[in-house]
Length: 139
Image (cartoon, rainbow, N blue to C red; front, side, top):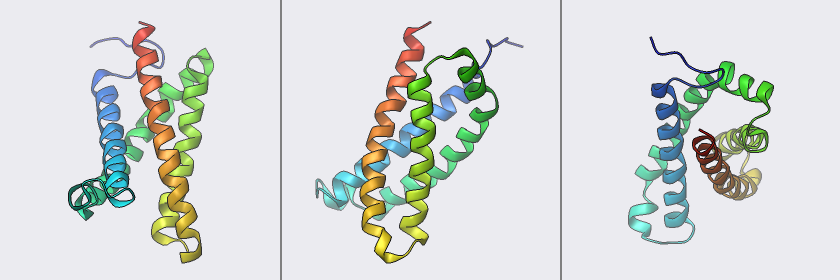
C-alpha cells in the first residue's frame, strides 16, 4: 500500500475531487455564458447544462466531504495554502447557500442569489485552480 504524506490525498481522491469540481465549475460557467450572456444560448443555456451543473455540484459536496477530515485539517495545521484553502471553504459555503436559495428560497431573493452565485462561482474557480497549481509547484 502506498504511503501518503500528512494531509495528502490518495491519487484517486485527488483526481475525483479535481474532476468533479472542474465539471461543476465549467458547466456553471457554460450555463452562465449561454443563459445570461446569450453566447451559444441554445447549447450553453440549455437545461441539460444546468442539470449537469446541479448533479456535479451534489457530487462535489460528497467529494468535499471526503477531503474535510484529513486534507483540510492537515493544511490548517501545516499553515499551507491557507488563503486559497480557507477562501474555498467560505466560497463553497456561500455557493451552497445561494444555490439553495435559488431553488427553495423566496422569489424576492432569487435575483440577488443568482448574481451572488455566479460571481462567487467564478471567484471560487480561480481560487481552486490557484490552489491546485500551487500544490503542484511546491512538489
